[in-house]
Length: 552
Image (cartoon, rainbow, N blue to C red; front, side):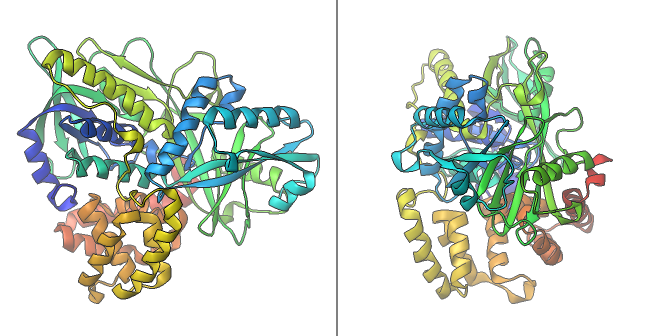
C-alpha cells in the first residue's frame, strides 16, 4: 500500500490523521532528498507533490551528475568542490542510475578555453572534486582528440581535455530516492497540491491544507515543521505564507533535443562552446544523441515549458558549428524536453551567469524554504536543511535525532555491493531472466535500470497476461510502476518511470493504446478519466516533437 497508485487516497487519509515532525512540499530531487535524510535520522515525514514526482526540473536536466566545470570560470570554487565531491557519493549510493561518462572538451584556436587554462582548470577540477587517479583528466593533441570523436570540426582544433563526468537518469534517481524514504517509513503522495498553510495561534506554520488533484478531496496534513522545496514554485508558496520578501527566484529555461544515432553517429560525449560563448553538451545514449542545453529567461507556466522553434534552431546551429559534416535538420529531431531552473535572482546577470548555489530562508512563520542548487548537490542540500530542522525540533521538543545517515545509504535498488559489483550483478540477472520468460537482453536492461529491485519485476512475470496486449517486459515494468512507484497516469510511466518518450518515442506510439487500456482497467478509471489521461499523453507526444506546439 505504501507506494501504490491504487492506494493514494488511503495513504492521504492516513496522513491527515497524524501529526508529523516534518512536512515537505515538493517531490523533486530536493524534496525527495530531504525526506530520505529526515526519515533516516528518525523523524516522522510527510511529502506532497503537486504534479508527479520529478515532473518539474528533476526530470528535465542534462541528465548529468556533474561538478559544473564552467563554474570555475565564474570563480565559484566552493560550489565546484562541494558538488564535485558529491558526484562519487551519488554514484556509490545508486550505481544503477548513475554511471561514469568520459567527457571530451575540444580546444580551438580563439575559443573560450585555451590549452593551458583548460589543463589547469581540469587539474583543479579533479583535485577539488577528489577524483580518483584512474579518472583524472588527460590532455590530448588534435590527432588524439579526433580519434576520440571524428565528427568534430577540424578547422582550428589544437587539442582537447578528457575528463570524467557522471551520467544519470534524473527522474529515476529522484524516484529511487523517494522510494527509499518510503521504505524507511516516510509517507509521500503525488498529484497533491498544498493550497494554503495551517498556522497555530502564534502564527507558526503547522501544516498545509492539501487538495488531491486526482480524487478531488481536501486533507489537512499537520507537522511541527514545514519545508518548502517546490522548485520553480517556491515563491508562489512564499506568497501564500506572506513572506516573499528579499531574494526571489528568476526562472531560466533549458531545452534538449534528441536525434537518432543513424543521423548523428556521435561516439563520445562532448562538451563544447558555441559562437556566443555558451556551453553545450552532446551525449550518446541508448542509440540516440541528445544535445543541450539552451539558457534563456522564462516567464510562462513552469509546469509546461516546451521547445520553441528558436530553441530548436539554436541547438541545430550549435551542432552545425561543432559537427559540420553531420548535416542534421529539424526533421531529424525525434524528441525534446524543456526544463525550468529555479535560480536565485541576481540583478544585471544573464541566464548563464546566475549562480547555481542553493540558499535556505526561514520566514517569520517558521516556514523553511530551500531554493537554487543543482541536481548533483541534492544530498548535501538535504543534509543542511535537515540539520536545521533537527536543531529546531531538539530545542523545542527536547527530541534527539541521529546525525545525517545518507553519505553511505544506498537508495532504492542501489544496494548491489558497491559500483564495482554492478557489472557482475547485471550479468547474473541477465542469465536469471530467462527463467522468467524474458530474454537475457531484457534481463540486463531491467537490472541496469532497477538495480536490486529487479527481483520484484521478475516475480511479476508470473502474473503476465498475454491478452493484455503488452509484451512481457512492458507488463512487468508497468505493474511495478503502478504498485511500487505510484505511477498514476500514462505520462508518469512513459516519461518519468521509463524515459521512453524522450529516448524511444516510437515505442510510445506503438504501446500507448495497450498501456492506457491496461492502466484504465488496473486502476479503475472512468471513461472520462481515461479520455483525459490519453489526451494528456498525446499532448506530451506533440510537445516533444513540434516546436510550434511549445510556442503556442
